[in-house]
Amino acid sequence: MNVFLDMVGCRLNQAEIEQMARQLRAAGHTIVATSAEAEAVIVNTCMVTAQAASDSRQKIRQAARAGAEKIVVTGCWSTIMPTQAAELPNVLRVIPNQQKDNLVQEFLRLAHSPTVESEAISSQSPHFDLEPISRKPIPGLRQRTRAFIKVQDGCDNACTFCITTVARGSSISRPAVDVIRDIQSALAGGTREIVLTGVHLGSWGQDYNQHLGILVAQILHETDTPRLRLSSLEPWDLGPDFFSLWEDPRLCPHLHLPLQSGSAATLKRMLRKTSPDDFTDLVRSARRLIPGVAITTDLIAGFPGESETEFLQTLEFVKSIQFAGGHVFTYSARQGTPAARIKEQVPHETRKQRNHLLQETLKESAQNYRESFLGQTLPVLWEASARQTVNGWEIEGLTANYLRVTATSPQLRWNHLDAVKLTGITAEGVSGDIITMDI
Image (cartoon, rainbow, N blue to C red):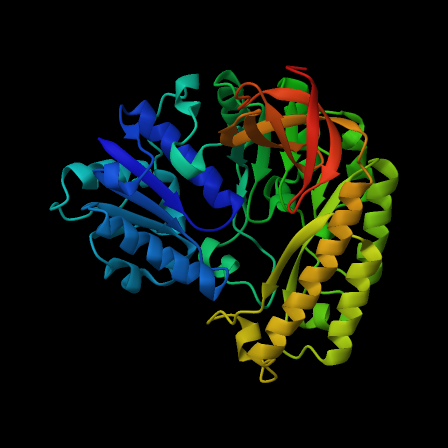
């Protein structure tokens, strides 16, 4: 059977569809690049913002319009809004996040016998062969050289703006042995970079009295991954001793630390377990112990009750930190969250204006960070090729510290690691010249 996998949202959603692809291939099915080629479709949805929820619905409708008659929907939006999801065209079943680990088993049963009344999904995960062949890239837009490995799900934090805690439930860690197994399979299939991901990655191990640092050290000791990258980490989960892990050069010098606001008062309303002073101290420690580290962040513009003074505090704080990049989200009220009930909602036009100012500030500091590496030669893992020109292939990839690099090569370099001298600034990153191939 030809199956198309699609998603909206975070790296965890990406990790989950990679796992589904692995299981489906092991069961003898083919992953295709578009819904038009598919006999069945799985859509992993998101609800972190109103736009993400809208995009999720659109993905399902697009699959139906393309001719997919068997659509199974999962993820945060469909978990929160199961009735709405079930009413969309050609949706066979809505499978909530809590049952997602057994989704492929249920999906295959539904795809072959869609008229059979659904039974409770088994609590026992089916056995799927994890041979390296299952690590082939997902065709189409999901084709990647990096493997996203889910190590944790759910969150025990109570950030007042976040619907993910409701959709994903309490924090649950995957055993280290399972994580290592997935990584070894990815490496055997040719992956050059492993990205650890979760809803609250820094909480890994807390449910059995361990810490994320133990897992990272174990991965570095037991695998030969060329690169290990950590996705988003809450600042309160880290301490200076955590940064000693970066003595191993395979650990990518990139930290994504969601700030959300640079105002102490706003952070308090968000129920974030940090303060501007604590965040500053953490960044200083990271920069002292990890030379050249890229520190990126997330920000929310126009959180309820955010006064002009509080916003200016955030703007000045973001300027002072000098992030290497980040994302700015215009606040979007999520029904069921405490923030949505706050009376002092910021006008939409004001939220958009504040978003723009934060975007411009991040853009300036990101350019400053890129410029500091001009003239240096860094390893680049090539991820994509844009087009062939008279001078060769235009290719694009990432350095370990998350600089997006473009170069021209006489040959395609997808999934190769080359030494590249950085020579110029581009709109989204830097340009460079390949110095040494296959380092």
